[in-house]
Amino acid sequence: MKNSNVIQVDQLTKMFGDFTAVNAITFNVEKGEIFGFLGANGAGKTTAMKMLIGISKPTSGKANVAGFDVFTNAENIKKNIGYMSQKFALYDDLTVKENITFFGGIYGLTRKRIKEKASILIEELGLEEVANKLVGALPLGWKQKLSFSVALLHDPKIVFLDEPTGGVDPITRRQFWEMIYKAANQGTTVFVTTHYMDEAEYCDRVSIMVNGKIEALDTPKKLKEQFNVDNMNDVFLKLARG
Amino acid sequence: MLPIIFVLPILQLVILSNAATFEVRNIKFAYIDNDHTPTSRALVEKFNASTYFEVLTDFPSQAEASSAMLKGEVDVLLNIPQYFERDLQKEKHNNLGVTINAIDGAAAGVENVYVTQIVQRFNQNIKVDLLQISDQQIQPINIETIPLFWYNETLNYKTFMVPGILVLLVTMITLFLSGMNVVREKEIGTLEQINVTPIKKSQFIIGKLFPFWVIGMGLLTVGLILAKVIFNVPMLGSLPLMYLYTSIYILVILGIGLFISNFTDTQQQAMFIAWFFTVIFILMSGLFTPIESMPKWAQTLTEFNPIRYFVEVMRMVMLKGSGFNDILPQLLKTALYAFIMNGLAVWSYKKTN
Image: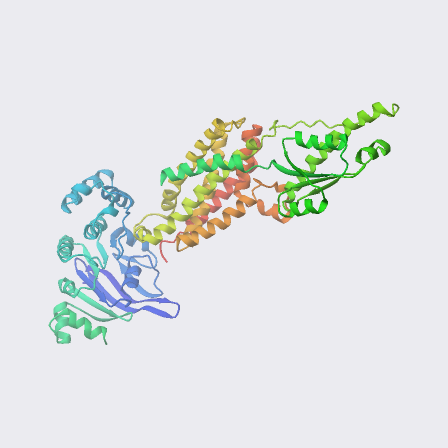
């Protein structure tokens, strides 16, 4: 089943001076999977993710994302992935439409395609009223949904979401996960980090990072059995407290 | 933001061009007249007639005059000795004491020239008077120089300053805008979003350069119009040539700005570095002080100063009507500079850390 792995990571390590932020992590992610990437603050999740999306050079190890090597072919990876960072990173001083047009343009979508995509996306998100308003004026929940949609604009093979629901209300979180499921159903692989353990339950498989290492990796069900607890929260606490 | 970018420089151009003058005027002039004769009074009257001097007071003693100068109330002090008139008539020769406050050495030099000119003119009148009275045989032999001031016949300092200040404005605005830009995106996080896209480095840099380049050219246009309308600065050379040179020049400045921006992590750092270079570039540009009077090593350094070339070209084209071949050396150096700086800007922009 090797071919169905869209992310293959082998002994991937990142050092900052003497500090090992990510310590020889190894895992695979299958096509169409929702892969939960958990860990306490500072466990190395974001650093690991940045290596996979090609904006941080690994110190050692191997990683292949969407069929391309992170060391030698980072720019090709970028064509095939979408990314939504922890911090809202669309342009606050552009309108909803302008942001969509801008990022669509960068990914090389034709003008016609961008127009189609934009109108579908704005309708789905219910942003018709604010389509020509500056993004900076939108509430956080709306911004996050917009970022996610923009990350999916070019139909990437994999989408990386770094704490997409941080600071978002429960209703919006629910809608957000509906969007994630929809993307996964259409064959997009979803790589997501979160601190909400109820969200971890929605994932197909979950890995838990502690101090730069992956300490557990399995389906939420099996993890609960393995640690003999009845929810992911307790799995996380057992691991993170060591 | 756009109104700020255009309104502030226009204010600067109008204010600085009027205020940043090398002319020494309103010189506070005081004198001690120990002679009290028609001749001494006539001499003082000469100063009174000059528009450069503001004649203040007749001090009774040297001590009082000195303390007034210490307080900064007096710039130039003329000491007319006792028996000034008598000695002049008898010995055809006399000395005047002139004391100049030389804290600003350049101004003091100019003041000295003014005083000397007035005294000389006075001298010639006196000579004629004296000749009529006594010695008929001695013919005065005077060699006079009659200067012709080329390219700025009326020695209007605004004609000289306006092109220079226009250079400053175009430079500062484009340097700061570009210097702050990439680093600002680093701060707000949008740069990371850009870095995970397949955008090419050169595309990114060109995308960053272009809007500022347009703003820079817009500033030049507004500045040239103001120079013509408000200051009536001549535009002897070709306007397209001016634009050609500026279009390349702005690329140099933007390249420097983006290079700074790529190397810094915060807007504060970028601001400090941009200021550092701006101050050096401006003071060593030949705008305020002639490059020829700098020490040799400083002159060599100015070769690396883009503002220097722009000031030269601006003055050459506007005031002398220089053509393409005249500014070719500056044009080539600037083009090379632009090529190097933008190469560095692309190189220093790292999508992967």
